[in-house]
Image (cartoon, rainbow, N blue to C red):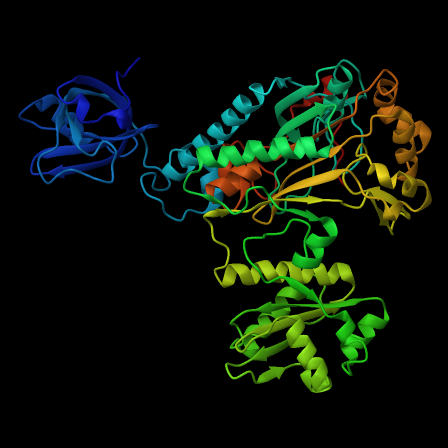
Length: 590
């Protein structure tokens, strides 16, 4: 090794020891002929003192070096002079009096500061990602990610799970997002696909008798890059045999509860055990099926009060089968008309045609966009329904249920952020269960699975699959954290007859189902155990744990929002000979 100790490990116990350190120059300072160097490696920082009276040669080298040069330092650990201790640095009681400095590699001036947290354009950060990752925040994110994955491996291994790798090259089975296709040189005109998840393979491992499987799995989806998406991402893939959904949920809850308590002692779990919300309850209360439950501002249904209210906007919506719902923004009755107009513009992004309001002043007097049409008893009922008090602001959307939920659900989070209601120290896990088994696709005139093709319906709802599929619930469960879906799972179908029935329900012709999933159907005839699992997203979980706004901040080498690697400039054209070997020809779009 080129060093005997890490920079960040040195303490007062090492005083008097001869040490060799290696790392990067975090900062260099000249003071009265003596040069100080903050030497940084992955473990932290050690202060180096180059004194010309101790080693003229080392001091001469120290004068020439600059930030981010890579050095090897030989010297003796000594206590810092009185009044020079740095309490903010773990190694702040000591310094290393250097006798020799070796420049292992000089460095150009970086395009942005490494030794301080400054705002840097993301495209620049991604282009020089290897420099960005040297920064303290990014280094901490990578370390946290490592600890999370290690904890998962240790936790599941202690519970008799086997970590099994599944293929990256697999069969293309188009559904959901687009597959990334890999052409075969050996089999001209045929393609592998990169897995969107190991779903089929982990179920086949249950058929194989593995019983308890997990994998830190790489997944690939060719979809538009919006929100927290990346073309390739990582999930904990987990499957268990002879279980029901309670078993899978209990194991997952224990895993992540104990993980937070061990790895993130500075964060607070809001609930233990985690609350459970049905899909319908999540929409009714929060407007979204992945609710942030750290704060209130819950939705209230006032559709019945809108009937024959005299306000035609509300009445016409209800006549057409729509709904009217509202939320109470406590203490915000002083919002100006201009501020409310901004909120109206905000909800319009999600299909809402307007935002009705009723604002109460501190005396309980109200100003409103619709109250003049309402009878006094209706206003009183409205205030009571939303538990309004002087100083509150009531906001309402009237539209189709999907629009009402989406717009008010988004508005709720927007206001929570604006009013400082989202405590970043709190981790609010929750389960959402009892999702619809299928949803009607009006464009295609067919049913779509709400989860995926292999999710089983609730046993008590099996009859609805034949008679009225829209009433059936799936054995699906979503893991939600601070308003993000961070994992989803289900109990799977393990019977060929039921699987074929579901394929037919969603419009897959028998020959197409056989071509795409024949291997699964055949496997189900060889004694498949009941099984289920879950797939929490590692990137999303670590992003929340690290307090970051995007998963790109917790991935070592992510793609940008246009799904491009700006550091390596990929994707890029292939050489003509490569295309020829693969029997491919690139055709320009007309």
